[in-house]
Image (cartoon, rainbow, N blue to C red; front, side):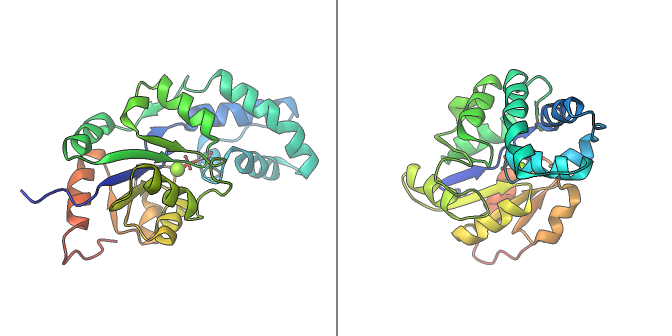
Length: 229
Ligand SMILES: O=C(O)COP(=O)(O)O
Ligand SMILES: [Mg+2]
């Protein structure tokens, strides 16, 4: 069997490793309730995730009424307080995640997380889900001063993992653009927050279930690989 073609595989967190939508929606709706505004649906909230929790809050405030920088500043600690207190109450790994991580470890890949969530919450979330020891490093939206789609978080991941050939796995435009900007191949998951809309982002491959991840990454390393997007 040919050697696995990637030394490092990086993962986005929200909408890729885990369905965090219930807890993010509960935190955002907690803020809206305090402002006597109606709650947003889970689908509305997931469309607002990907550029960090603060940006999700601003989009939620815009969608439900007025939104000023002062209101975002004032609401952010309330949102984070609630979110930290219920971080993984309704959070679930996507089906097949653990087996896919096992398969990648067996193939010799070093695994990492690159999320736009703040680093300390991403670290705690992974620990709460019992998966912290699977990842060599966790880069948050606040780790290197710029979040995805900047290439810097993915380049920092590669550096921290000792260098080598890397691939990235994500569910949003910010993931595909960050990987492109960093010059690494990208697999998009259609079970995340963008759903089948990820095909329009032209990633190098799309998977509908984690069972497809190791085969998709293996194909990406073949010299005559053609984009399936
Ligand atoms: O927007 C966020 O809070 C983070 O989202 P990500 O894990 O998909 O980067
Ligand atoms: Mg995501």
